[in-house]
Length: 284
Ligand SMILES: NC(=O)c1ccc[n+]([C@@H]2O[C@H](COP(=O)([O-])OP(=O)(O)OC[C@H]3O[C@@H](n4cnc5c(N)ncnc54)[C@H](OP(=O)(O)O)[C@@H]3O)[C@@H](O)[C@H]2O)c1
Image (cartoon, rainbow, N blue to C red; front, side):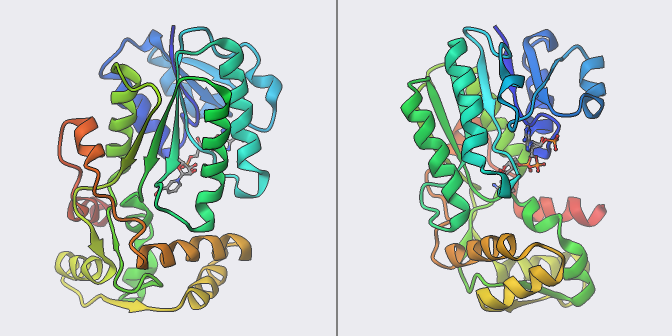
C-alpha cells in the first residue's frame, strides 16, 4: 500500500510530497514523474519513483496496487485533451482496485471555460465507481505573486475582474489539504470546496503591493478582450489567453469566492494570508 502522487515534480506536487514526508515514511510514498532526473532528490530520500505520462496509457499499467491512495494532480497540457489524459489514470486506478483517488479539481461555482476539463474529469471519476475525493481548489496566491515582474515594471495590476473578489490561498495550503485527505480517514466520496479564509479584490491586491514596495501601484481594470490581447502580447497562444482572461469574468461574478471553510478545516489552521505570499515573492 502506497500513497501515490502524480505531477510530483510540479509546483503543487512538490509541496504535497514534501508535506507527506513529514507524516509518513518515505518508502510509503510513490512519486509519479515524467522525468526521473527532476526527482533525483526525492529518490535519494527514499521515495519510490514511477515514470509515467498521461499521454501514454501503457506507462500506467501495473503502476498502482490494490489499497493505494492516489492523488491525481490535474495536468497543464491544455491542448492535449486533459479529460482523456486524466481518464488514463482513473482507469488504471480502477483496474488496480485503489482505496482512494483524490483529484485536484476546480471550484464548483466556476463557470469559465477553464473548468470544463475539471467537470469532465469529475464525471469520469464518479462514473468509474472508484472511491474518490474531489479537491476543488480555488485560485493560488502564486497565480498573482509569481507574475510580479510586469506589475512592478509598469506600476499597474492589469486585470479584467472588475471589483470581484478571490478567495485565494497558497499552494502549500492546498497541498496540506491533499495530505490531510491522503493520510486521514473518512474522506471517501467527499467533495471539498477549497479556498483562502479571506477574499480580496484586485484593488486591495494593488494596495498591498503599494504598501509593501513603498511605490504607487494601481489597479487598472480592462475588458476581457483587452486582457486577452495583453496575454497574447506576452507570448501566450491566443486560445489559452482567452481561457485565462475568461477566468477574470468569473472573478467579477464572484465565482472564485469560497465560503465553505473546508480548507482551514481540513488543514487545521488558518490559510496563508495574501500579504505573506506578496512578502515572500518580493523577497524573491
Ligand atoms: N488553482 C490554481 O490557481 C491553479 C493554477 C494553475 C494551475 N492549476 C492546475 O493545478 C495543477 C497543479 O498546479 P501546479 O502549480 O503544480 O502546476 P505545474 O507546476 O504546471 O505542474 C503540473 C504537473 O503536471 C504534470 N504533467 C503535465 N502533463 C503531464 C503528462 N502528460 N503526464 C504526466 N504528468 C504531466 C507536470 O509534469 P512535469 O513536472 O514533468 O512537467 C507537472 O508535474 C496544474 O497542472 C493545473 O491543472 C491550478
